[in-house]
Every structure is written in structure tokens, then in C-alpha cells.
Image (cartoon, rainbow, N blue to C red; front, side, top):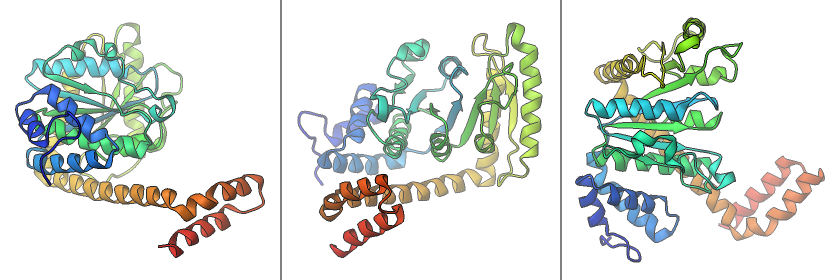
Length: 334
């Protein structure tokens, strides 16, 4: 395939050169190409990724989640700024499953992270709007690779929703951080057991002022909860720390634990194995997504879909029978 652009956009050669030179403008345009759903753009995007792949994989990938109101944006702004001061280059990406409903994106207003938004060593990218969760995470994975090729050595992936988005983010990062609050009565309120099971680190935020003592108590509660969950398929034992995005307290300790976690996994070979498994699951998720798209777009399926959906809703046809009929129509016409 020729290194051409579509329209007046940059060529693949331009993007490869610009990303190699850490040109944030060309990085942003390359990500826009990645996000495009036009067939010609998708082909160019895959050529671009193939050429940049040898320059990827060198970053520390950290997923960050937490219930609404926990202070994720302020925390990421404070942590990212601290890391830049230590010589790192930080990319912040979002996985926002609500964007397909609202059409907006969680990082659309970069004023929520004012220091990072103005830093040359940082790059903030929102979720693509109007996409399914699978589409958002696929583009986030590919954006992460472009950011690594551009020299960002820390990738922070923020997830906004609760449920499946946490699982999908945990499956694209090296370290999964759950941000929690103290002083809300039940310290496990709003955090599902399944999310805690994914955590490599738990950080009790807003550990400052009158809330400091409650944060320390919450730290002990979460540490006990992690012990009750039993053994994990990793040599790393999850840790709990207290932090304050407002004062900066605990941020250095937290990042030291992230680095310790990364070293332990790298030295034991678990990091390489974890990333291999992630790539395999990513491939199968793409296969499932493309098969579903092919199924929905098939003429025989579209011909019968509305009728069967209505029949299922009215209770005249069972979901199993409707699904079987649609699959039969899809398979017999191929």
C-alpha cells in the first residue's frame, strides 16, 4: 500500500516522521486517522500502526478508576504534574462508555486538568464520541501505541463508567489502580467486589485535613478486604495507600509502588506474559466486533431483524427462536 493520505491530511510517512519527532500536532492527527471509520482511513491507520509497532511497548501503562466524586481528574492532574517534574512524559487517555449515549467525552473540557493541559510534556486525549464501548477501547489501545511511539513513557488510562469498562481497561494496562474515598459509611460502598479483585493498587483519596484519620481507617479496611479475596494469579500482592491530590501527600509513595510493581512483573516475566495475553484477547474482541458488524449488515438479517425484534418484545417469539432464525438466515445466505 502506498503511503498516501485521504483528502488533504498528512501521509503515513508524515505521521511516522512526526510521531518519531514527538510532534504533538501530527500525533493528534494520526489519532484522528485511527478513530475514523472510513474504510480507506482504517487501511491507512493499520499501515501506520504496523510501521510504528517496533517503537511501542516502552511505557508504564496504568489504568485508573473510581466512583463519581472520588476526584479522578484532580488526582490525575496532580500525579501527572508530579511525574513531569521527575522527567517523565505523560499521556492521559479516557475510556468513557457514556460517550456513545451523550455524544460527549469525559475529557472534552481539559480545564479539569489545567496543569497537564498546559504542559508540553503531557498529552490528553478524550474518548471518541458516539462509539460502542468495544469501539472506544479498541481506539484507546491503538492510541496508546501511538503515544508510546511518540516517546510518552507513562500512559494513564482513565475509566469513567462502572462495570464492563473497568474490566476492559484493566485488560489493556500493566497496573490497575482503584481510587476510593473514606468517610462514606460503608467503606466498600459503590465499589463492586469484582473491581477490587482487579486492583493492583488501591488509593484512598482526599487524605487531608479533617478527613485524614478517616482515610487511615479506610486504608486498613481495604487492606483487610483485599486479604479476604484470597490468592491472585500473580506474584504481586495488592497494596493500599492514602493520597491527597490537593496537598500531594502520598503521590510519591504511590508512584514508587507502581514502579515496584512494574519491576517485579518485568523481572519475573509476568509483564511480557500479561501483555501477550492482552494482545490475544484484543484480537478475539476485534474478531467478535467485526463478526457482529457483518451479521447486522447482512441483507437477510436486516430484512427480518425489525420483525423479529418486535415479536420478541411482544412476547410472541422467544429470544432463542428469534436468534436462531436470524443466525440461520445469515449462515444460509453465505
